[in-house]
Image (cartoon, rainbow, N blue to C red):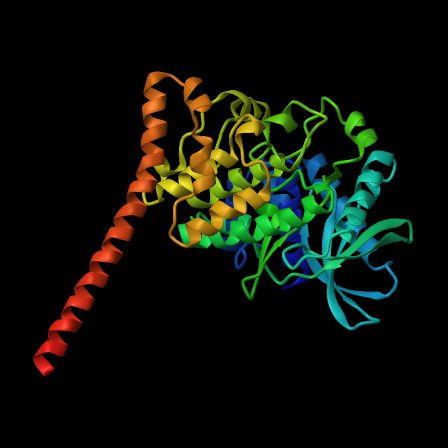
Length: 407
């Protein structure tokens, strides 16, 4: 990858992360840039200004941020920077080699424009410290966090692969089996984090990585919070921390008593996106998206992707219940149903959520629909068992006839 291509890649990602343009606008710009490469080459920054997607001043600020981060990366002792991996709203990530152990790592650098705000610096270090408490094969491992040359950095495990968001951006929809495997691995990661007293609070496709060997890694503990940290919880009261498309209702309301069920909701919204190809709630702006999380009824995923089993749809709906009391009470309970689905069995824990008290709060038509969805999975399971028994009887009967004929 040339320096120009690398610069354009980072510039484009930062423009999207900071909400300056849409995915469609960036895609159109990149296509035009490629078509003009031989006859009239142009850098992405100037092309996006030319098309009116960003202003000249926005482009210059982004350019400055990329340059600052590049300078910062070369001031971190003990590491050789190899290239840029990506950029977010608050940091740029580089691939590097840790010289002492001769291994690949990823380094996240906080741009200087955030250095004057103690809240950003505190959050940056909190991410590193939170990740440092965790040790699980499905969580990106923290290695070091510190300051060098006036820049703050966070060194972490290097994962060679892609994110779930990369596939979704390309228009790919995951099969039920693929999605179940990925979501199950993330659930194991969350179970470990919750057992260590940490809530992730930003489970989404961009924070789920898949390595080349198929291992799933949960990344970015930037919004992680300790369940026992009352002081931080109180300071965040009334503020909506999270990503609008995947945020739990209680996070939108800025509740203090956030627990692991908020992560279950985010994982459910991610699951929904993976198997339907669309986010659970869509709107023109983030405030309207969050209003829909609070008020609008979820369209069952199997109504969008009719090839989905009723059991998977039930599990997602329980994960995304608007009231946390109606979701799985913890990730371990969720894992019971995920493993059942992977084994072709009905999700018993999800079925139990469709109890009398839940039906009592629904209209007559909704009650019938909910009951039908429960019994549909049970009926499928019963049919499978009947077919298995019948097949066994036929085989045994055939063997008996063969034995009798031979004798």
